[in-house]
Amino acid sequence: MDLREQMVNSQTIFEGKIIKVTLDQARLPDGALASREVVYHPGGVAVLALDEDNTVYLVKQFRYPIQRLLLELPAGKLDHGSEENILLGAQRELSEETGLEASEWTYLGYTLASPGFCDEALHMYLARGLTRKDQHLDADEFLDVVTMPFDELVKQVMDGTIADGKTVSTTLKVKVLLGL
Image (cartoon, rainbow, N blue to C red; front, side, top):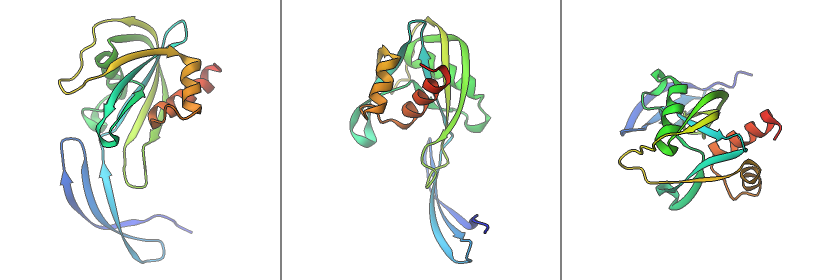
């Protein structure tokens, strides 16, 4: 059975600086029509920066939509959407948020944030060979850099203390990749 849905029509109901939201009519596999609300996002990057002592660099920041402080990997949106080189985006975000630069970059693939309503793809990297430079946050960005042993990060991911999707996915990929 062909499970694909086909768009019949689409109406943009919101277009902001980062996201666009459409209300679509889709034809289902059985021929019926259904409404689909879709959020379009330029995509993002997340970086697990790991030093020679297996210390990882995280950022603590307030996340307005959930009204909580979260501990996350350095990350951000791709400023130029699909046209932006994702490695350059990852390098930019790591440098901006932590002041770190890395000489070794390993691409870990991507994860889909919430594909039931959003097309956002988050690209994951492992960064090693770290050197410290100056942090240079965006004007509307306020965060603290936090370090912890990689084993502690894995523990907090597994016990649910850290629940941010990009941090969970990237951490577990690095654990499997490096066998740490």
